[in-house]
Image (tube, rainbow, N blue to C red; front, side, top):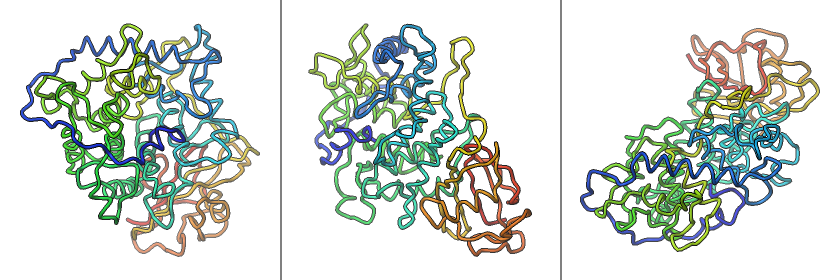
Length: 470
C-alpha cells in the first residue's frame, strides 16, 4: 500500500522496470555487520523522533508519517516513549489514539486502505486496533469493505492494493496475547486471492490480474511483491511455500550487482528496496544471506545503509539526493531493523506506561461496530461490519446477530436466526440447520469454536466468527 491516498500510491500504475542485473554465484558473507546495523537503527530512530510535531503528532491530512510507528516497533522503541521534549502527555501513541477515535477520521470519503493503514500502525503503537475507543473498531471498519460479489477481495478488486493490505492488517495485527484474531476461513479466502494475482514472473503489482492472462504475464514490481509476499506470510503461509519462493526468486533476479539494490519500477531507490526487504523479513528470509549477496559482495541491506546520512540518521530516496526523505527513512529503517509491515509493540520504558491500551467495555448509548464472519461450511463465507448501539457494558451474540439482519455492511451477512427470541443454542442460521454433529459454533478473537449460544457474552471489540460444522 504505497501510502494510501498519496502520489506514491498512484505511481504504482506505471509498468515495472526491467533490466536488473541478476546474480551468478554469490559469496557467502554479507558486508553489513551487526554493529553497523545497530548503529543504523539507533541513528534512524533518532531521525524519526525528529519528525514528531510539537503537539506530539505524526499523522495528518495527506502525506503523513504515522508509518514511523511500525519502524519504531521494529527497532525496539515503544511509540508511547516518543514524546516532544519529553512531555509524556503528548506522547505519540496517545495523540494517535485520539486522532483515530474522532468521527472525522480518516475523511468524508474513506477507502479501505485508510483503515488498513490505521490498523497496522495502531498495532505497532500498542493500541488494540479493534478497541481503539468506545466507537472505533478498525477491524470492523475493514470488514465493511468485503466484496460480496467477489469473495476474498476487500475494496474494489481492481485496486488489488486493498486486498494485500487487508491480509497484512488482519493477519499481522494479532490480539494482545499474540493470537490471530480472524478465522482460518477468512485467512484462506485472502490467501486464495493473493495467489490468484501472482504474476508469472513471481511478483505482484497493485492491480488485479486474476483471470487476465495479459496481466498475469506482465512485469511485476518490487514494492508490491514485498507487500504481497509479506501478506501471504502474515496469513500463515510458510516461507518455504512455492509462491513465496517464487516471489523471493523474483526479488533476487532484480538485484543490482554493484550496490545490492533492487532495480525498481521507480529506478533504484530506498523506499522500494525497503518494501522488498520487509517482504523477505516477514517471511523469515534473510536479506543478507548468500543468495542475496551479489558478486560485488553487496546486499539490499548494504544498499539501504549506504544511503543513510550518518550520524543524522535520515535516508535518501535516491543515491544522488542530497537530503533525507521522511518516507524513505521510515521504509528503510523498518527494513534494516528486520521488520515486516507491522510489529508487536515493545515494552515501554516510560514509568507507568503500559504495553497496550484498549477500550475495556462498551459505552451504553455510544454507537459502535463489531466484526462478524459467517462460514456455512460450504465455501459460502460472509463477512461484515455490524453497527449497533449497546445498552450495557457488554452485549450478547443474539443481540449482535439481530443487529446484523438490518445494520450490517455489506448487507446479507445474517438473514435469519433460530430461535428468533430468547436464549439457547442457535439451531438455524441463514437457513442452514444443524445436522448430527454438524452444528453452529462460535469463536471470538481466534478462540476455539464452541456451541453458539444466543446468550454468549460479547465484549467491546470482539471479532466474532460463526462456523457450521463438527
